[in-house]
Image 1 (tube, rainbow, N blue to C red):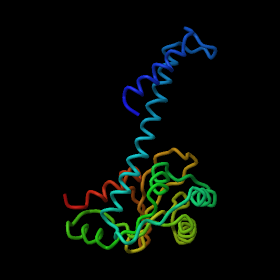
Image 2 (image 1 turned 90 degrees about the horizontal axis):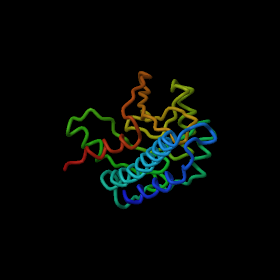
Image 3 (image 1 turned 90 degrees about the vertical axis):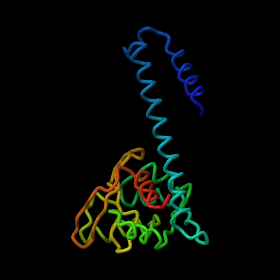
Length: 204
């Protein structure tokens, strides 16, 4: 949708707000502020999901072998995992893996991180919805905090996790769980930003 289309949709919404004072006691100005706030939130949400898909597609092109395409994921599988763990996965993650699938990174990513001496953790495996449940439940018995859900691992078996949330539209950080010393670190503000950072490892 173009900027003009967005302006037209807002104009149509503004035009529908005729009374000076509405039945809920709000004025035209207050109603219009609510519309603008809702519209802005919607645009940011949709943009974030679009960027997430694009980033995961680029990650796949950079760090997986062309003969091994990403493993497909269904909405039903994700929802089943969410129900088992009583959480909702982040919207940008859901949109990206439903569109692109689960990439199968090669050792090239780890090699690039080591060669460039970057302070980054490699990702070696994205967990399937069934594995999200089994790995999370198994590691909770071994020290993974109850409020974390694993969705990927590095080459050493450490976990990349999302905090649990009841809000399907929430933007949540990516958390790294070190299984040796049981430490927890926030390494990215969102799944989209995390994938974006891994894409930047590639030489220009």
